[in-house]
Image (tube, rainbow, N blue to C red; front, side, top):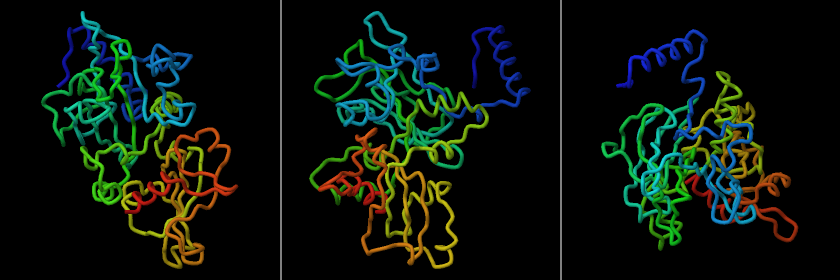
Length: 345
């Protein structure tokens, strides 16, 4: 149910909606929206300090997505969006809204269990693939929401805060919502994690952050604005710079179904029978292209084989830690090996 504060607001909103329809524009043309009223990201300078909250002693760029921390060697998976509204105590009161239509996948209301504090994860389907949005450090998550609850584009799901379990905490002046857009790796994560890290706790099951691969929300939002109705998430993923190529000797893992539009056809493998896949990974480990391979196309017997590395991209974005160079030779780093293990588990 949509409520308007006055007849005038109803007329204005109805006129805008009608105008969008007449112009052939609709919400699908802009599938993702910002989760708060802060729109400074669309300013000519990309938002800067008006939009992003930096880490202590750093510039606003440390609140962006990517290799923006620890001299480029630490990954930040989302956008830290600045508060616009405060109560008398200086605490943030900004409503936090669903970026697009979806359903609740997971809620953590026990802030002590995560450095994300209280947070909510929503599941969406965009251009035929699953996308997950995360809203972290919330003061509160809407009480009536639970796993499976459906939400609409722009519907309030919580209130901005500064919850976290980190020793330093988040000061009032740095209050923000940490906003992510992710792809989901494997629903068998819990079993994989227990096998790989038998002595480590996993308080969040398959919703553990290690089971997500982040996409830059700013890149998506700005591309939407530029492309309008021509925006397509699959095309954006396929246009990501390639970090490396690997082969995996596995023909049945969840990514193949969940992100099938990223698979490229290969008549040779169809003719011979598929025995594995060649994957192009971006710097954060997202398989942006998957090519089925036949027996004659896969060399060696290794489960995983590194085929090539884009050294320019590795130098630009080293924080993904997918590959490493030892004695002049590129090889899969521990994170790269673990990612492929999880992907194909």
